[in-house]
Length: 332
Ligand code: PEP
Ligand code: MN
Image 1 (tube, rainbow, N blue to C red):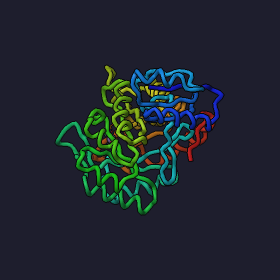
Image 2 (image 1 turned 135 degrees about the vertical axis):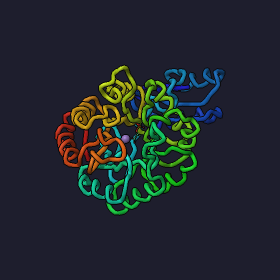
Image 3 (image 1 turned 90 degrees about the vertical axis):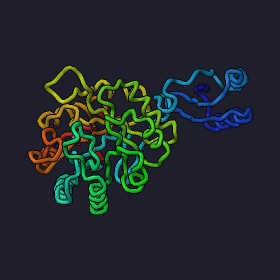
Image 4 (image 1 turned 180 degrees about the horizontal axis):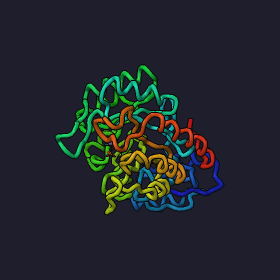
């Protein structure tokens, strides 16, 4: 249930009300003053009457369907060592689709290091065909670890198996859940128990509601640090790899309190489209971007067609940096 409090109340008075509610043996789960002062409580229908009578309680209403990530709760801010994912920031994630070698990773990071907050690179690749490059697995994770210690830039990489959770928690800065695992509910529940940010991609054919409910699986299990990522959905359009659903970004930001970023690379599948879609993402209010960058796109072991070069990437970021303040965003 949600308890709405009188708008003119002070924070001391809020604490008094929490005490009163707790004296009734009712747990206060969440407190927020984003739009108005509200408390989220765990109570029975019979207890509502008693709470309604407490001074400064305006009303008691049913919790929203998004019991943990609703927009009515305080915004989630995910802080890493060098950057923040929040409604005030526009945060840049970039790197190759797959980690291919030490040389490849060093070459890319060396060239983009001044413009990137988080380095990406897949070590476990959920490929459509079992005959395509499947990733370097543990060796790829080791390469990422070396990159992290050499450059001191946080690392994000995709998890595909529950068995790997401990390794990921100890060695990466953000755990990515790929589109194909968005509804792997056992994995999501387990990620709800860890103390590590999770970037949750939207499934290939999932609605915004299903995507947000997937985030609830993580947050309701205790891990509040979820970043949503729109990466394009399947539509009848076949000239692009997927269709970038920018209205989903606007919706997800309206409906939830989570940071929302955009991956234009998997959305369009074409390197030449990335700049325009990246700028459009900033314009619709995304809180960041994830772009695939490769030192040699023509010979990439996966997703070369949609990978941009470090030079192109640096140009795009410089445009994003110039435009960000117009959208009340900081790239820092
Ligand atoms: C990826 O980011 O490497 C990836 C596989 O993306 P998606 O899960 O969105 O297909
Ligand atoms: Mn890819």
